[in-house]
Length: 148
Image 1 (cartoon, rainbow, N blue to C red):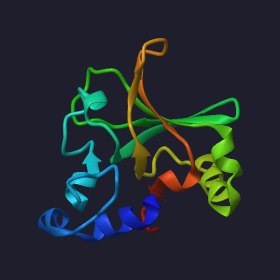
Image 2: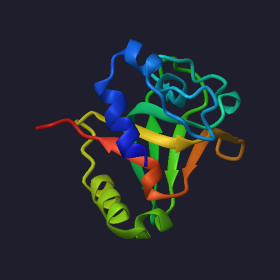
Image 3: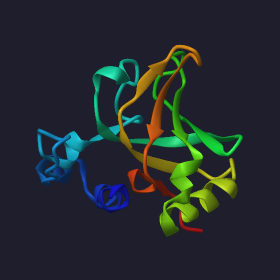
C-alpha cells in the first residue's frame, strides 16, 4: 500500500501533491499533500497531534534489538525526543514483502542515505523517552533506496 503511494508522491511536484486526490478514511482532506507528513518540511515537536499519516524521513540509524529493528529518523529540528520506527519480528513473516524488508534492514549501510515512508501514528513512549511508530504490517512501510 505505502510503496505505491510513496512512488507517486516522489514523482509529484509540491503543487501536484496539493491537487492530486488520495482518498482514504484516515485522510479526510483527500489529497497527497494532506496524506503525507515530511520530517524535512515540518516540525516533529508535536507528532502526537498529527495523527495517522504516511510519514517521510531520512533514516540516520538502523538498530537491531533482538529480532526487532529500530529505525531512528532524521529531524529538521534537533533537541527533541528521538523519533523511532519500530519493526517487530512478525512484520518480516508476512510473505515476500516481509522477507524483502528484512533483507533491506540486514544489509543497511549507514553511509548510504535511505528515505523511509511509513503509515501510522507516533505515540510517546515515556519509558524509552522517545516517540515511536510501531509498524503493524510490511505493506505499511517503504524504504526508498538510491539508485547505484
